[in-house]
Image 1: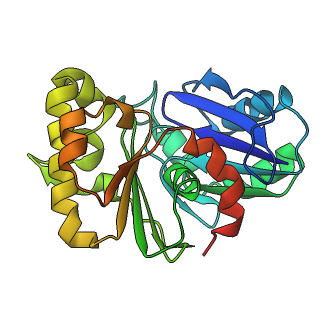
Image 2: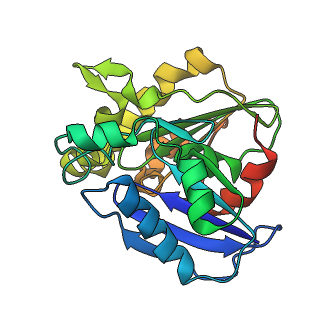
Length: 247
């Protein structure tokens, strides 16, 4: 039994699944609290887990650059009041180099795997055949790359510049979706996909995350047969498969 926790910029949700990926409890979601020092983060995950069935291991997806379970950078949790607010220097120092995997394993009392949240999401959808890229559309942009089912080193694509000095995180993030509306925002996503196609030359691209469901039918139809829109529930289901898809 695996506790799967999907930590986002606006919400933290979790459930418990068996090895076949079947949920044994309705997913529980709480708002991501801010400010979020690491102690409050650990408390929040533990509180969510306490209301779920028993589990023997845990998978936790965290936004940002996560390397071997250690937080190199995280975009939202270092801010004063959440996504797009001002970073707090004290929180930046606290989160940088934080061994989230070791801390959560100790707090939860079970073996724990901590990955970037998009990588956990990706584990729930990739087939293990060819080069597969997963982009998650949520508060910002998440990215995970697999070759033959093996997870490649994480790329924080969201921080790369795209247009007008904006990063991908800002250009197609949730704030711009709300400002532009679904139709114009969907066209932006299509421009991003078209621009990235010659960079990755993927066999399959998956678009997931909470905002993938907002993409207009016209844009989805125009993206091509090598692009698949997947449900956001993969962020939980991937918690089981992630243990078998490590590099």
